[in-house]
Length: 112
Image (tube, rainbow, N blue to C red):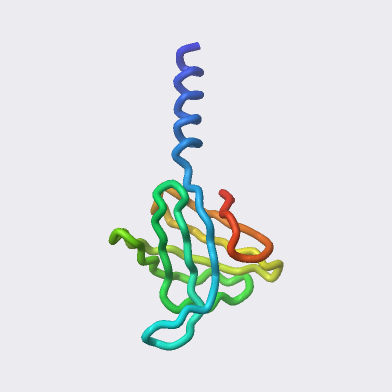
């Protein structure tokens, strides 16, 4: 009984602290011209992160580096599917793994 209660509490803590956020893939104007970028908003902290120029080809993972407000930066990878879904692998950053959303962007990310 005690073991199952501890396991249940650990699962609830994991759910409560899971990443929640939104992804957008749009053209941004910068010093290098107009380039598509991945933009991520973390609902838990209010932080925003963006990639450098990132051209997503259908069903091909692309490595990128996310730069965030507040100075937190991390490597990630992303892909866009032929069915118009965006997948982001946080590679452990933000206590998150592989997330995705489908339809139009911006959209809320869900765990894969």
